[in-house]
Length: 252
Image 1 (cartoon, rainbow, N blue to C red):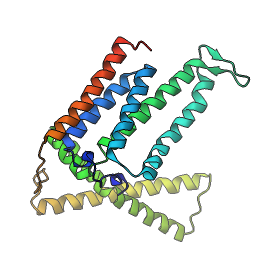
Image 2: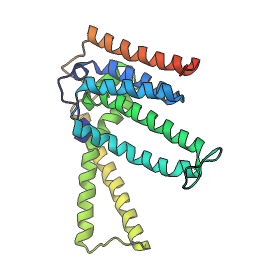
Image 3: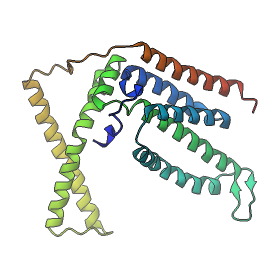
Image 4: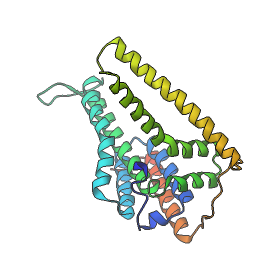
C-alpha cells in the first residue's frame, strides 16, 4: 500500500525498534510545533533532513510526498501576505503584510521539518509494526485496533466506491452542477456507510468465530538494542536543544 512506500530498506532506521522511533518522532513534532523563532525552525528542518539522509529513501518518491504537503503551503503563501494586517512590505506590486509573510514562513518550516522527521522515523516501519509499537508504548488498544483496521480496509472501501461509481455510470449518471448530482453523491456516501457497516459486522463475527479476544498476537517480539537507545537519545537531545533555543532565544 502507498503508506508503506518507504517501509522496505536497509538503513539502521528501518531496523530500529518502532517504539523508540514513535517516541522520538512524537517528542520532536510536539516541540517543533511549539517553536516560532526562525533560527530554531531552520535548525529543526536541518536536523530532519539529516534523519532523511540516514534513512536513505528513494529520492523521487520522497520528493513526491513533500510536494503534496507543499502544494497546500503554496496556497498559504498566496493568501497570508495579502490578507494579513500589520506592517506592510512595499516592493512595487501589491502591498504585502509582513506578519503574513512571517507566518507563512513559520508554517513552511514547521510543516516540512515535522513531515521530514515523520517520514524518516515513522514510515520506515510497516503499519503493523507501528501498531505493535503503539501497544508497546501503552497506547489504548482500541486506538491501535482502529489504526490497524483502517489501514486494512481503506482499500476495500475504495474498491467499493469504484464499483458503485461504475454502476452509476452504467445507469447513465453524468455529474453536473445541479441538485440531482448532489443527491446522487449523497446516496453514494450513504451506500458506502451502509455497506461499510455491514462488512464490519461480518468481519467482527468472523473474528469472534476464530477466537479473537480484543488483542492481536504475533510470533515476533521487539528487541531493544543499543542502537535504539542511541537513536532515541540523539533525537531527544536535539529536541531538548531546540526547546532550549526557543526558550532562551538565539543570539543570531
